[in-house]
Image (cartoon, rainbow, N blue to C red):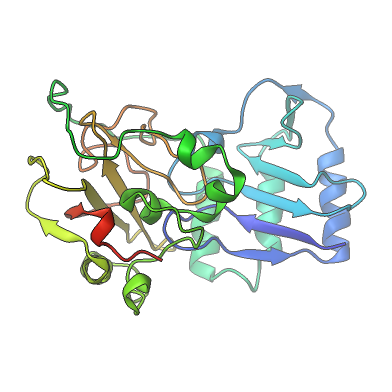
Length: 286
């Protein structure tokens, strides 16, 4: 039986995956079986933070492993019906990272190793905006639309969410108009690809659009971690987002409500690129 490991890290780009060898499967079973301690604590990644969110191990009928196991922050979620398994530290994550040799670039592996070593650190702040106004543009903040169906959850990303379009294709800027934006992502290239899809650049979010909603693009140029991410302003004048194949949420990496994506805690997404007006009926997203 095959066992697939997915590094959960990107928001816009697809996450890298690889298969474990028979020896590696045995090693994983041994490492997970070395602890019987349980905790009511939930994995840090379950809040849908931006950046490194651990490893997702999937298999079908592999004796000794659950069909789906999430590993992050020294914990393993081996069954949603039971408390988390305490792994006693980051060693299992470091080992899983080592099994991805050949599937991960050296820069990305080095970046993930640094994140495993500094797990739990958070920083940043945000500037509050006037919350009295209620926008009459769609959409409202409705996370259930994106989170309740497992297929929709896993196969739609931040670009789908910002444009309020469920395509189940893990949409990429530019693909809907025939040409995916160049890699690595950048403010100019990713923004231009989104414009080809129909996004309209605007100088400020301080407007009420006649149609659609205001969205914001950010990019990570953090060494070893190159990706883009989109935020969406909802009709309550606050912002929400969907980091990759994780749940839609209305909080930033520090767990605070997002009043301004330019000022909030965005984790490794260090560049704020700009604002756009997305009109779903006029955009081509795929």
